[in-house]
View (tube, rainbow, N blue to C red):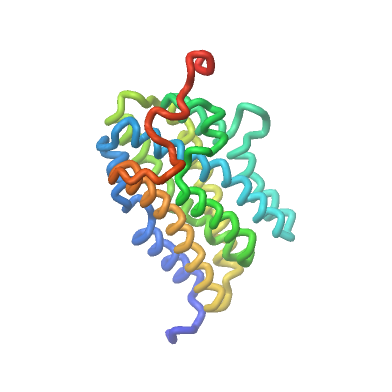
Length: 253
């Protein structure tokens, strides 16, 4: 096969799975530190606080993608992602469950929602992802979501590792992750089928692979930032410092 010949759908899927095998953030040292029990309580707090911004912006990203779809069948499928994170009523959904996690770690809910304490690198990475999905082709936007192919494994590692090593978490505080493997499987099945159907030329296929590589970079750089700030100790100006943004007796009541 010449360098510019289109790949078969099976070859394209194999190339995408290779991206996950070599670039997904389960390979990052912070991931390994978190799930092997080596993080301090404050480092777990920093992870949960910063990860909230990513979780909160996922439905914003998905609404952007949804608005670009001409097919009603595709829109019906994609909007499930927004419902998963936002819920169908107040007090439900993945974002609410993530807030329960941050509250269980001592944070004041309003402080977390304000995102005042997140790292600048977290903000830049997440907003770059939202902008990518707004500005690149619809095919690339869909392809960038394919990190969900690899997320069930990292979720299983996260839950089992944190339950085994941290006495300040429980299955209830990690409830965000309960529904995610099935949701991620459903979503990645759709996105993979979409990409394999619509990425016909080698140029389109290369763009699809590049989109997934970009998304792995978005996830990786967030852990780089956490490592630099809260493991190496170089907390940048304006970022959360241990002891800030915690519940008062009144807010915890």
